[in-house]
Every structure is written in C-alpha cells, then in structure tokens.
Length: 222
Ligand SMILES: Nc1ncnc2c1ncn2[C@@H]1O[C@H](COP(=O)(O)OP(=O)(O)OP(=O)(O)O)[C@@H](O)[C@H]1O
Ligand SMILES: [Mg+2]
Image 1 (cartoon, helix red, strand yellow):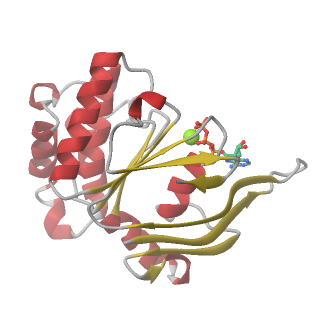
Image 2: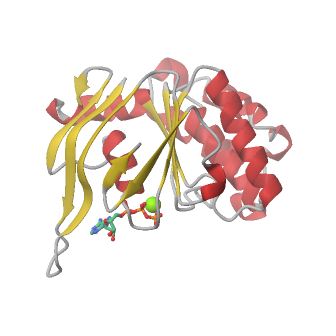
C-alpha cells in the first residue's frame, strides 16, 4: 500500500517566491486500485507522483510504500525501493534518442540484480510484445509515432514488473482513438495485477480507473 500522511511540498527556487506544490495531502492507495487524479495545470499532480516515487522529498509529512517510510532509508535503500516498487511514465518525453526501442526498454533492468541483467533483452522483448510493438524493436525513438512512443514508455515502465505504475499524462498529444488504445493497454496491465496511479488534466480520462480524485491548488478532494 502507498500512503501519504499530511504531505506538504514547498519549492524554494533561488531568488523567487516559495511555491506550495502539494498542500497537506493524506491519501491511501490499496493494492489493486487504479486511481485517476485530475486537476488543472500547476495544481500539483506531477509533484505528488514524484513524492510517491521517492524522487522528491516532502517538506513535511510522510510517504510510506508498503509500510516503509521512504525518507527514513539511506541512499542505497531508497534507490532499491524506487527500482523495485515503482514504474514511472514521465510527463516529458524521456526515451534516449541514441538507443533503439528495445535498448530503451532494457534501461531499467540494467540497474537491477545481475541475474536479471543477463536476460534484460528477453525481458524487454516480452514487455514490447505486451504493448503490441514487437515489430518496432530495432526502430529509433525519432521513427515512432506519438502513440507508439507512449507504448514504449509503458513497456519500459513495466519491464521489471513493478507493483505500482505511476502514469503522468500518459495520453498527452494523442488523438482520441490512440488515447483509447493507450488506456485499454493500461486497463489490461491493471487487470494483470499492477496498481496504477494516473494523473492528468484531461477530463476524458475521468471515466477510467476504479477511483477518481480531484486536485486543486495542491489539495486533494474525493
Ligand atoms: N522544481 C520546481 N521548482 C519550483 N516550483 C515548482 C517545481 N516543480 C513544480 N513547481 C511548481 O509547483 C506547482 C505544481 O507543479 P506540478 O508540476 O506538480 O503541477 P502539475 O499539476 O503536474 O501541472 P501540469 O498539468 O501542467 O503538468 C506549480 O505551481 C509549479 O510551478
Ligand atoms: Mg505535471
């Protein structure tokens, strides 16, 4: 289970005013949920995912992943937790342009246990088959359509079978039909046992998932 206990995140950019990214948010996400959080641009959605993934430190409050207080861990333990627990679909394009599709999907496996590393290529090919892209393994990111790129990003996020998949605007810049395809794919990953937390400003995604929350000005409401 993922739990946020009264989490606040305050950004302090140098020589600029402080910004409250997340404001006293408490939330429990049980295994098996598919949570959709919607809210307008700047309300704190990416901030919340970064906190859940252990990529950002709360200014106050606690983040617990499967009972572990994320920020009580040392660097090594925190890296291990990020690797093993969460797959992340970032909002910004994040494929490495000089690597082909299968190599991009192999990247997370490069940092896991050595015995898994040997099979990284096989794991990556399986993940690409799962997202319907077996025919694009040798292509480079610049040769992909936006929808295919999203699928590769999904494959990379699930290659290590993480229990939690964090999806930040997974359907940005997609046409309606491709959006439906990507969401169907996420639904099938959810059915396979992965807990999903999806954030978006697209109202069209409200109907998906098992639970919907709204965010505004850093606060969450049912
Ligand atoms: N590293 C940072 N330094 C300073 N301020 C930040 C930083 N990251 C985010 N913010 C601010 O925190 C607030 C929340 O940002 P966040 O990126 O979480 O919003 P969002 O809901 O994901 O928006 P979008 O839908 O546009 O992606 C915004 O006011 C933003 O300007
Ligand atoms: Mg965002």
